[in-house]
Length: 250
Length: 356
Image 1 (cartoon, helix red, strand yellow):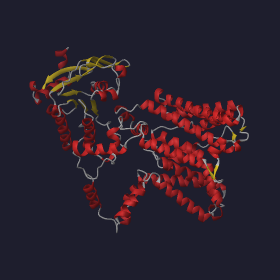
Image 2 (image 1 turned 135 degrees about the vertical axis):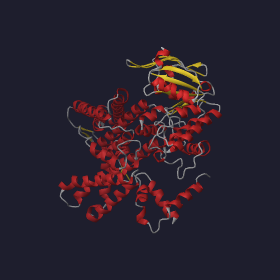
Image 3 (image 1 turned 180 degrees about the vertical axis):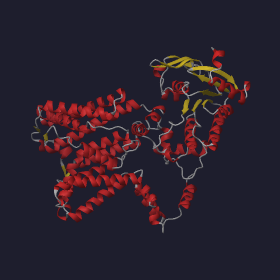
Image 4 (image 1 turned 120 degrees about the vertical axis):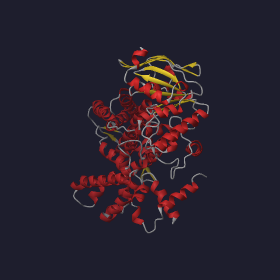
């Protein structure tokens, strides 16, 4: 992302955003509420275009006029949102393929094939062992961690190069957070890249190679993991929240 | 025992099963209460003639409500499309004028629906307001164009289009009942097996999820309203042809159509729709008035009974949760406690077979 800016009317949501994510890098994105994390993610994933700036995917410039969620998928960018990745009242197999159904010439869905693949993902990629949950189950029957598992499994199945996790551990029990962290490690092992967004600094610290601190629409700091300990990072962020770092960076 | 239970489960999952049972129960009750009328096939044939227009409009409405929207403008479309048909009929030679009229009627419906869709999806007007305004406006246009008058379709009985759409099969069964059923089958496939329908369900469920997963929410909504407009126009064509007369008020079945959708099990909250539930729902609604009158209870009771039946069915739907009997039977599991196996055992059995 080069010089990305985004205005909503007169409100400046993002300015001067320059960010690069390596091919097999996990970047932890940290920032307070309203810092612009979600806006950044939405530009990256084609939900809406920025007011100005450029985006390069694998070295190729993206034309924002033709960039949308589908073409972001085609570029290998997938997103797991905290709460809006799955249709609550829909069955699981539909959730795997929504937006890119396996269809025939007339747009009719190949239900058998979709169910078979969804089952394959659930059993092999995500390792679902939960009792009574099949591809025909409704999302509303799943726990929070299971839902994130479905969303991450979906991203991995569609061979994403960059998986963006937007607060994937919010409202999850500790055990389920551990599962999600485990998935992020799998992303790294699989040679893929990820942007991990979370309020939980220990989680971010554990999975990330580098930390980006976003503050009021600007990138405040970029720190490689090897240069900082969890304790220092925590302290650093606290200072940031208190506005003490403003002077140093302005 | 197992096979019986799985059969019960299978039947329970069939779309519209509870409301189909309500319809069956209603007819049984009416056969007992008014045997002279309800043991004769004539009353059922008359339902097959009177219900389809409401049913057709309700079928389109089912998809709209599944998408979390509403369409209050179809009565105006039924009127406008009827006028378009009658205009084509009397302006040209009926042999092909009928076809011109049908083309015009469908085009008018699609146009009204498209405008509704643009208002809702692109401009962001809530559908209840956009379509309410549209209903007044297009109904007014229809009255203006017709000069407030009826138009008789001359020689309609002998016309091929009449035979095709509202004729009698074997000299008895109204053909429009089959057209309505065919439309229901088509819409079932669109909703449950087409990516357009899947988009409708996800939009009704949560439009944000649909959007971030790559569904074109706005375009889907516009297409949906345009489709609904055409379906309402089809209902208008059927009404006008069946009676042989266009009159501006002919689409006056907004509330029965909405009631059909809701007692059929489609949730007002959106996200899931029951096409065949609407089919049975429309026949329940359409049979009540005649049924009550036939029992020789005073006609003033008709609406009271209608209200009671609607409320009862909707309570039943709410109790079953997803609107299917399988959920109800598990809710009342204790009722058949002596024969029911241990639920835990049931789960284990399922697990054994699942991975293979």
